[in-house]
Image 1: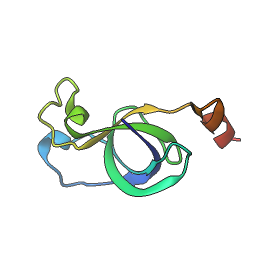
Image 2: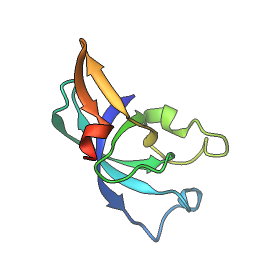
Image 3: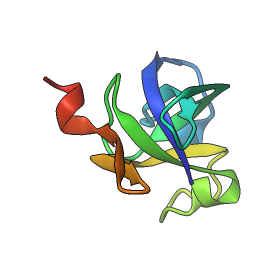
Image 4: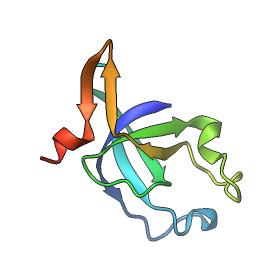
Length: 100
């Protein structure tokens, strides 16, 4: 899994049938220090994430490991909304501090 920040939504009215009803978000990956990387991805949202939230993104074949979606053409799926990240006993990210 990778850590990413949600930048916005991606809307597609015409898409492959198995993608109907799937919400897509544009995410930018983050390193272990909380710095934004240059890598972007469009990810399917399974958890109701919103703009500015930090999320867990699974990529590759793992992005399709959901019942009824095994054959869906997905390369990235948001599987969690991050509450906190700490590295070496140092807080890197806290959702609480982002909302105040």
